[in-house]
Image 1 (cartoon, rainbow, N blue to C red):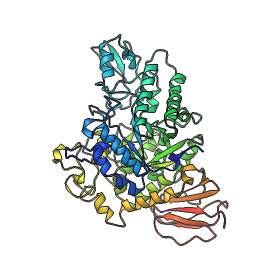
Image 2 (tube, rainbow, N blue to C red):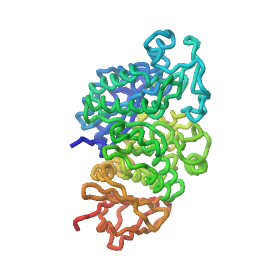
Image 3 (tube, rainbow, N blue to C red):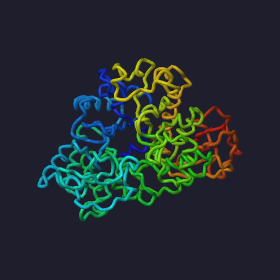
Image 4 (cartoon, rainbow, N blue to C red):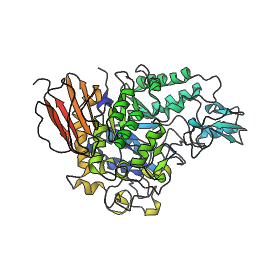
Amino acid sequence: MQNLWYKNAIVYSLDVETFMDSNADGVGDFQGLTQRLDHLAAMGITCLWLLPFYPSPNRDNGYDVMDYYNVDPRLGTLGDFVEFMHQARERGMRVLIDLVINHTSDQHPWFQESRSNPQSRYRNYYVWSTNPREDDPNLIAFPTVEDSLWDYDEQAGAYYLHHFYKHQPDLNIANSLVREEICKIMGFWLELGVSGFRIDAASFVIEGIGIPGANQENLQIFFDEMRGFLASRQGDAVLLAEANVSAEEISTYFGQGNRMHLLFNFLLNQYMFLALARQAAEPLRYGLRTLPEIPSQCQWLNFVRHHDELTLDRLSDSERQEIFDAFAPEENMQIYGRGIRRRLPPMLKGDRRHIELTYSLMFSLPGTPLLRYGDEIGMGDNLRLEGRTSVRTPMQWSDEPNGGFSDAPPDQLTRPVISEGEYSYKQVNVAQEQRDPAALINWIERIVRIRKQCPEFGYGTLHILETDDPCVFAHCCEWSDRAVIAVHNSADRDCTVTLNSTDYEHLFDLFGDRPYEALNDNKAIPLSPYGYRWFRVNQTH
């Protein structure tokens, strides 16, 4: 039987740089991360996704890579990485790493050789033009920061393509040598024990702008090549694509089940926040119905927030504005004209009921759930920091100086910890919450435990259930002759809802926002404001 471990995984995303500093230099490192693996294991995490940790000038959070075959010296050594991998494996945790293949740093030796020597094999590792075509502004990743896809290089005497920052020149994926190099990079890290790769900016990888003779079909076939290489080296390793695309384009990334194993569920994430803003179930129903059917071995990765902005670019202008009005009404809470640069608790004004409802929704939607470091304690953001760094502050471990993240002087930290207000490390930290049975961290551990007992949400077939209240979203997932149902009240009011279905009898409570009386046969389901209940369907009653 094919190993589909990712169908019922609990994924946790972190940046080594901001997680735990072991040597008091102000920068998180692999030794620090290794020391904190027991925290993650105790939560029930089964898979870690690490943001880029390669050598880098660090002008874009490590996504400007200088060397794909090493570890940033600030974060440790390859030996530290291997020891971390061993300790993660001992605790039953797999590791995915970022594979940044759309672009490199302009300091990468490949680019330096490419710009300085037109006869070099590295010249065509990048996309050059002496007369680039007019830009499509929709293809500029950071439209309020960059105003063009092309930048002129004096030394090369030509323009180079960059979808992101101008210091991140795009690789030429049409070049077979580049494709071979990418597979070699994958092979290197697979040998060191990783279980797969998150493909950064996957939609830009196959764009093909400025590449002479490039066609979309040939570029897309590279995903088949990557999958084939992965399968030949490690049969249960996976590819996770970051591709914020329309529903019609999703098949490009899943193929017939022969390309990406997982895809971030950007569409559903945006409709989930629209439903929360409206306190109505219909946007969520619409989002789920908009998603195409995907091959059985493929999977969605569901999330509330991750390290980038909460992007809302797939919604209409008016829908986006509704979410801004509800959760990011001030201009400095927004970014790039399309997204929100806040963590969830401040967006929801710290309302514990609303926070729980949101995570309960995410954990029960069809797919695999993703938590981001700090989610378990309800970390906040620092809007004084520039751009996306507002949601990339160091992990808050205790009320000791620097939140227990580092013993370095505060002015030497890779980023400032949150030290003021209700989300200060003095108020929100792991040590304090672990002493409080009612704290969010213990609720997160509980929902992780219950979710792992409900593989139907990961493997099953979705059925959206109609209800008699427009604020209540209900759905069922069926798998292997078993079924679970989740019911969520998006409104700040009590309600009693009836499911408009007679297909599911004898529902037994698994999880909820508070203890409820057992249901009787009339299926009237009471829900508190922002209430939620998960049920198992007893098929053998």
